[in-house]
Image 1 (cartoon, rainbow, N blue to C red):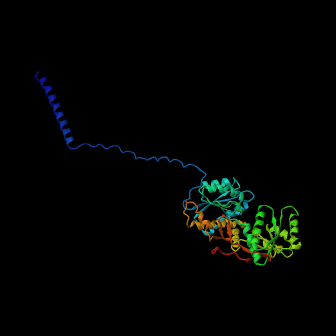
Image 2 (cartoon, rainbow, N blue to C red):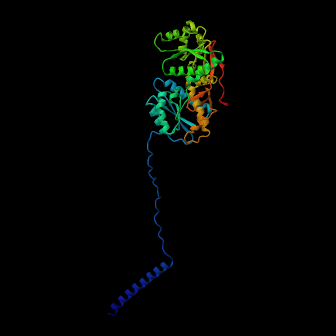
Image 3 (cartoon, rainbow, N blue to C red):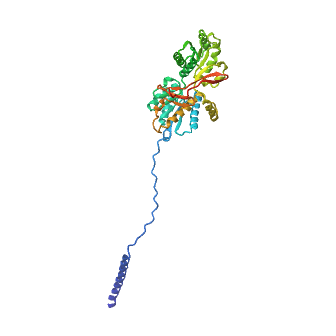
Length: 402
């Protein structure tokens, strides 16, 4: 009995001793500070780029905040594509010659979708100046579109009826060339004139210009006749003119018309010794001086001093001869670059600068715009002589003092 009672007591004492040891170990562990269990290493955070909404796709050209946006509206297809291409090449040559980076020219075809569509696209693309179009009917379409957008138009047309209200004409005016050659003839003692005029709008304006110029110089127009393309029309008109003697006869047509007319004039009683006068149309024919039948004839036009150098450079670069009127594109660029000195990119074109009385200079000499928007040009008088043309009255170099 005693043994059985003692055994449970020894087992209990062992349990108590182990419990005391465990408690002591726990207290010792607690007294040494908290136990820190390191966390598992986290993977690096990868930022997902935020989606960017795509830019809307439009037909507009990229914005160019460093240069002036200028549109060139010319026919690049159709029957006038040759002239349009020559004008385009001339603007490129002007940029290269001046080494200018202040303007950016974009060309739009007026023949493909029409001049109005070309103008609308040019304005939508952010152009603030329009060079062109070439034809008067195209200028009429472009003018109101450009005016609403406050974009000036420098057209290559010579039809004065489309000028004004933001449209300016760079084309050669027949009235100015007629006034110049009549004035020179008057200075040579000629007071009695006759006129051989083609039918059509050009002829109507040429006849009006002749009457006014002769009257302003104190002379008289003794006779004036019109002709058209029908066989015998020109001969019939010259026969009627030959009934009265005249000192000079203005042939207000092309150089080819003059070449056909002069032999008939010389056979008529009134025109045997008459001085032959021509218009600016003669200067569009680079071979006009080679026509011996025209020896002694006078015509007024823009100066050719710089044109010959330009034509040589043009041929070397583009492999073809330029159209004579392509210089209008070259000079339009020179004008724009000059004004760009005081024209901040991104602002509207300073149209008032076009009215500067001293005008501008270019390959075709000095010119300035009148209140009507038509380019007034300093013209020279040339004479056909010995297989070429020579200047017999030089053009003034500028408009200073006028």
